[in-house]
Every structure is written in C-alpha cells, then in structure tokens.
Length: 561
RNA sequence: CGGGGUGUAGCGCAGCCCGGUUAGCGCGCUUCGUUCGGGACGAAGAGGUCGGGAGUUCGAAUCUCCCCACCCCGACCA
Image (cartoon, rainbow, N blue to C red; front, side):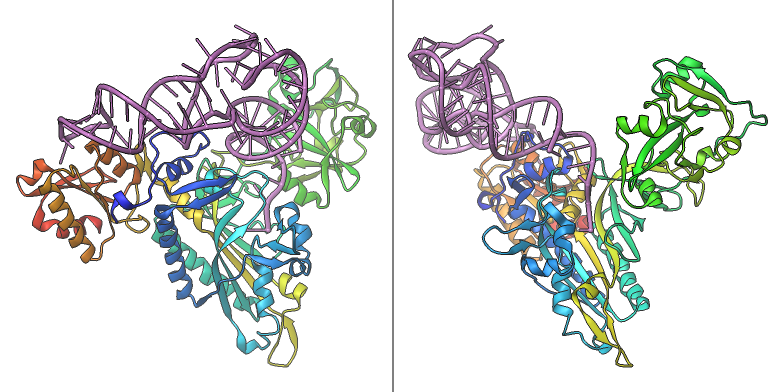
C-alpha cells in the first residue's frame, strides 16, 4: 500500500479528549475517529487490525467446531420480553423509536430463537455457534476510547448441550480456545474465576488484562496465578489477637468525635483497637456492620451475605434504630442483627460507639458482650496481603475484561421453550453456554501493553503491515527506483508492505513510521544506496542493520520471525 | 444520575474576568522557489453560524437565562 494514496490521517498533537494510551494512539495513528460519544469509526489502518484479530478468533473457534453465523443487530423487542431482559437491561438496551425493535446488546435470545424447534433431538447436539457482530449498549458513560463504547465489536459464541457434563466439555473447549487466541495475539492476560453474578448459571471465567484504564479491580497472585475480582477476592490476614485479660466495659465521654481517626487521636489509641460501625437497611430491617478500625466494607460481599436489598441507613433512621447519631454507634445495646468482619472474631478490649451520642465504650469483649454477633469476610483485599492459596503477596490492580466464558445452564432455553427430546423421549431444556470476546478491546489492550513514547509497537501477528518501507527522498531517481523494486519484490514474496512514497522530509517520515509502529522499517536513502545498501530497523528493539539490496528479503524474513 | 471542567479554522490553543476596529497564534492545508537521513526555510494564499437558542445593550466570542455536545471523578456495568 502506498502511503501517498492511503487514508491514514495521523496526528502530531495529542487530541484533547483522549486520556489513556491506547485511545491517544489509535487517534494519532488514524486507526479510528470518534463519531459521537462511545461511537467510533474504524479507518482503513485500524480495520486491518480488527480483521487480523477476527481472523485469529475465527480460526480458533472453527478449530473447536464452531460454526459462524451472522445475526442481525436489529431484533424485535418481544423476543427480549420472553426472557425478561428488556427490564433486566433497562436503559442499557437501545430501543428503536419508530418500530418495536431493539438494537441487540448481546445475542443469547437470538441464538436460542434459532435453536428452538430446530434442535429437537439429543442427536442434534452438541453445537457451537458463534458470530463476530456489532453490539449496542446505551452505556451511561462511555470512556477510554474503544474500551467502553456504546457500539462495539464482539465475538459471541453459544454452546448447546444435552447435559451439564457435556456443557463442561464445551466450556472447556472455549477455555482452551480463548487462551490460544490471546496467546497468539501476544497479549499478557490472566484468568479470573467465577463470580456468578446476575446472569445466573453455574460457573464463569473472565479473561483480564492489567491496565489503569480498566474498570474492574482484581486481586492477583503472580506466584500461583490465583486471581479474583475484588468483589469476591480473599486473602490471608491476621485476625485481631485476643488479649489475655478482658477489661470491663467503660463508658467514655467523647464530645464531637465522629470518625475512627478522631477517636484514636482523642483517646491516643491505635485504630486496630477500634471497631467501626455502619448501619444498613436490609429488606427493611436494620443491620449493624462492624469493621476493624477504618477498614471499608466490601459492598458486594455484604450484599451476598445479607441477600435481598441492602442500602445505607439515613441519618434520621440511625437515631431511631440505635439511639445515637452516626459516629457513636456500636455493638453493645444494639437491638438488631449484627455482622462483623472476620478480623474482629472474638476480639476484646475494643473501643466502639456506645449508642449514645458523644459517648463511646472501651473494654468491649465481643465474645462476652455481644453473643449474637455473626462473623463473615466483609473486607476488600489489599495489595501485599497473603494469597490464600500459596501465601505470596497479592497484588491488587485494575483490569480490563477482554473475554468472558459462562455456563449459562437453562435460563434462556427454559424461558424461550427451547427443548429437546432425550433417548427416552422426554423433553428437557437445552443446556447452554455463552462466550464473549471484545474484539476492539483486544486491539486497545494490545496497544496498552505495546507502545513507547514514540508510538505503537506492533508484533507481526496484529500489525496492519509487516514492513514499513520508507523512501527518503522522492526526488532522487535512484532512491525511488530502488524503493519501488523492493516494494514489488516484498509484495511478491507475500509480505504486507506499507510504502511511504510521500514527498516529505526524512524526519517526518521516520516519526510517522515509529508512530504507526510496524515491526520492521526499511529505509531507502541516497547515502547507503551508494554502497548498494538499505537500512532495516526493528521497531521494538531499535536495532539497525545495513543490508545489501540483493539480500533484503532474506534479512526481512529473518527479522520478522 | 451527582460533582467538576471544556466548547473559538482540520488539530492544539489565546482572547471572555473588565462588551467597542477587519476575532488572533502555532501546527496542518494550497501555490511558487529553495532544502532533502530524525517533524526544514522564504514568499503568497485559502479556511470561522466564536456549540445552539433566547435575552440585556447603540453594540455580544465577551454579560444573563435555557438547551446541547464532549471530557474527568463518582454511581452503574451482560
């Protein structure tokens, strides 16, 4: 491809609206342009990369017996009513104004629609159906460029099986295929285990990439590979040790002391001697949540323990429930359910609120004074805490979800009446799995992981072109002649070549080449042509080789391997 | 949806507080000439509903009100 004719609008300056590296670089390299918030057009260069990722996905999906579909983006709303997901998605679901259609945010319903009444026999299964399609979600807040958009490209696959054992197999095939896909793309990822979530089902894994642009927080153990969403992650952490002697409960006057920090300062104690109280309303009933010192409650853990609806109590409610204002609430004398974090298990000599405004108790012995207390893991793990599996230090960081594999079970087949007959002629709902990969996220994540201050550093697998050929001075006949012949020769050999044949300064071309980041650059200039040589530069390592014009292809092949 | 911010040429910005010529600057773009291995130089040009609407005023990019778009933080997130 000749750059003089190719639509690659590169940007020298950093666009104002972009913050994360991949977003900045995708704009600067002319891979994408924004049309509207969270809606991006892929330009020719960017689309080449999308196609490369898609092709890898396609190959690996086909290798596990997947069959590619191309489903519509539009679908009648009533099909989503069948599974109750119009309500479940709520405002996320785009609805068409002048006809009762929605823009599909995912395709479980549509695939199930095609399966029902067609896959009627156990003999028809297993099946793996997939597609690479645009999804539409009315995200309240699109961000980070292509990483969270209102419209994005997703590979979604669905498996149909007759038993949970067979589902496990289909699931396992996807797990392997996904690892191959991300390995081939050259992405550093890790796998986070089940957090079954609102989708229902029996198991799931998320394929994650560490990135500050990510929206999930995970705990990860480099040593053993343990990885879990912060919402469920556990760690080895000491419980507060029980003192040998429990002192008596004593009431302390603590005027205007509201926070744990203030309490510690006022009494000159350490925060590990205190228990913080939070009151929530769980399905209309108050619950006191006790944490050691200043530790924050992990909302997800709390909600899964309490089940049902959980919300913080209003300030007026607090007085009514506990008799005290926020800051003076504690376990002793609290007349409702009390749950405490495990670190407080059987602790004594604690300071906490006295349920009387401006008073705290000291010498609290939870074992002695609060017999009805229940203990759970309620805190979020933090970096540096011990891995529960191997004891090494856990790292906590944010991450981007690249893929998700999910054992759906029969949620959709039951709701939509997709049944099959087994060997005995009995009807059962089809057992399904669903498996997604964010294709544009793969591209963005690769760039997040592979760039420097000059631009993108592609590998051969995903690079839009293998070679970036630069003719330094288009006014010199010798340079043009040699560049043209190298260009044809490499194309003949099956390489993808981007040829910078523009009338421009050398520095301009070098910088564009580094920005666009093809793995290998070939520089054709007067200076080295005098010795019948051209320069090859490896983008990643910045290594340079002077190569005889007649040996270019061999050296290119060697360097690209 | 809550908090903060921005909107002026393709891109990056100044001007606005304190209303008053023809709305500027850098990059990019067009033409000509010079230059040609790390974002060149000279000369001449083109390019603007100052986000939109209403208002105040003799006069609005500038003041007031409403709306819209976009960004950041939070909430939300199959």
